[in-house]
Length: 448
Figure 1 (tube, rainbow, N blue to C red):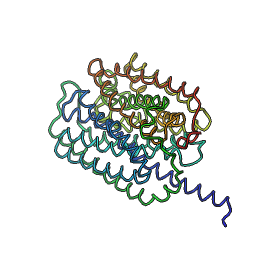
Figure 2: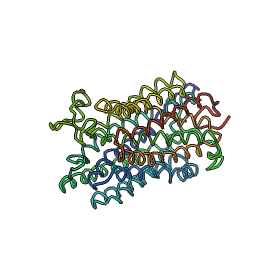
Figure 3: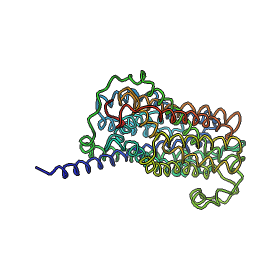
Figure 4: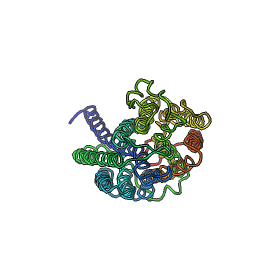
């Protein structure tokens, strides 16, 4: 008989391998999701849209979370995590194929359909993978594990805008009076086609990798809790409060991200300034075209720093969460993010561009900490609570439309008053969570 220590070591290695496999999925959906930011700017120019109409791209993507999250929770409860993840990846491949058809036919309605299908697959992925990442290991470190996985998610969101801006935005301008020529339009559509072709291949490779890793993940995952009903989260006060928090957080983060390139390109911010090119790493990645001011493509590349801030913040947050109460850290980060939005709203100018990019640093820990704080306090099953929380990601569809409309009426800087209010409510959520007892300690296991 093998010594108990050897058995524990083997089980630990297996769990670590399973966690690594799940974390690759976080990277993939982060990369794909952040491509929506340069895509919003691109379709605004390609199809001559208002800010509100261009934000329909974000709406189509994030509305899928509203439609699909509870069906996804039912799928995960029936098939369990690993088969559900494989279904999700196949759905994402279908979404990419629709995006290829949309780019080749220059059809904005097909773009919206493709984004919806793609996000439907990501919804299933999130419902399955978020609780799984939290549960693969010592219950005391569920916040740490989910935040670490989200760090790799953020690495994907950092790379997405760089690639998207390079492929989608070359020569595209959206300022008043600007004209997008047929050649520029064709080049942007070809870039969209190329991006989603390679993403389709990436997802197919991930599907093969996860299929080969299915046994390791299945054996390492703990036995799921007994579900108390698919819609039981609707009767849990903390599940509903957490749902509101996710709605506001995702809405604020997406609204800022999808407007960021347009905001930075505005003449009142960086549109007529070369100041960003004097910042070493930022200026290098933006890649000045030699024309005074920041073009839309250069601004689109700068958006990577918004998401890159989240990546850095999650790496730092992973370490802090091992020492600081999650609710306290969340309260501090949300308060700072609210103050930064108010600065952009009240002060504006070139400095507001740098402050807006830095908001990502404080967005960093919000999703995983809200998610695990809610799972710990919800009286409903983990499957139902996770389904509700992922449904609430529809905030990423609703709030960008509101911010886009406010931007149309009053300008991009003024529109950041909406995210400021969202972060203020999130600060209240964090303080309330710090005062409420946890009903479970593993972010997924049974209530005790």
